[in-house]
Figure 1 (cartoon, rainbow, N blue to C red):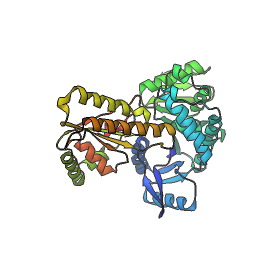
Figure 2: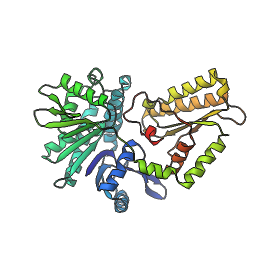
Figure 3: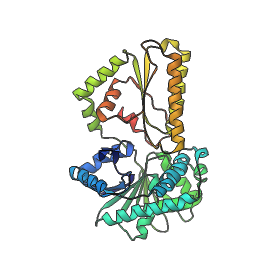
Figure 4: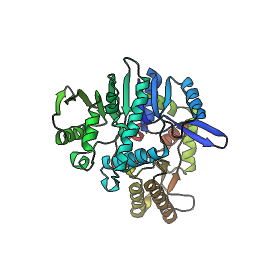
Length: 383
């Protein structure tokens, strides 16, 4: 299997002592790493920094310890600005989450999106062997299939869409809607998280593309287009249940969970775990918690909200503004309602390692998950 995603499942941490690899977090990595460990293959993606012999050596060393090989794709700073920050996260991400007022439809972003997708396609083409399955992931790389077909790659190409797919009235606002839909139909298989997403995708095909026909195929659909027939299904993503169950029963995790409950003075623990993103509804959640404390004073000193916000995309101004807003809300709520021996909100702005995360899951009485719109929220399944 050849997996292609925007980022490799590792993060390069730079320090005065040099560079080191850390395992990445996030739903895509959580879901796919166990799969590739089982079946072996190649994972292609951007390593998060500029290419260098040191980075190549780190990736090679990590590959030797895993059951799959990491292959980097180089992206320049300007390309990252236009492809990742620009087209992917100033256009596609907000639009597909029904937040079109946050979109910046800069026409220069599109050409760079195509250029970078072409580079991913070339890297994937160089790794393919006869009979391989190529599995491309998410909205950053929707044009990779079309680029690989231009390179005369005839192997089986699959694509999975991790975020919501919008309805036609939202998708219509994308100036490159026809190009995106046509490119997606160069894959043999398209996967979506929910039946709603699949339904929206087919509705967009019918509205914006001619000579395309969708028909039932058992529980799924096939789409006939001039160039090929594409299988389209809804395949909700999951987690490695056995890994989480085994880890949660670990003695160290049990001890940590007990310590958390003690530190919170035996309060009922409400837990939020989110990547820093405006789609996760974190300010709205904090406003709701404030409402609880204001209008139900009997809950004060009896509950504690632990809000874990994992840093993400902090080089994008909107995300820095969101971080500031969240921290201001936490400070205001704690200042207004906190009492001696009781803090309403315990705010953690960092990634948690697996044992610490499992300990918080075990200590919590309630998981509070409030996305404005989401693909498949794996925090719910992990909890």
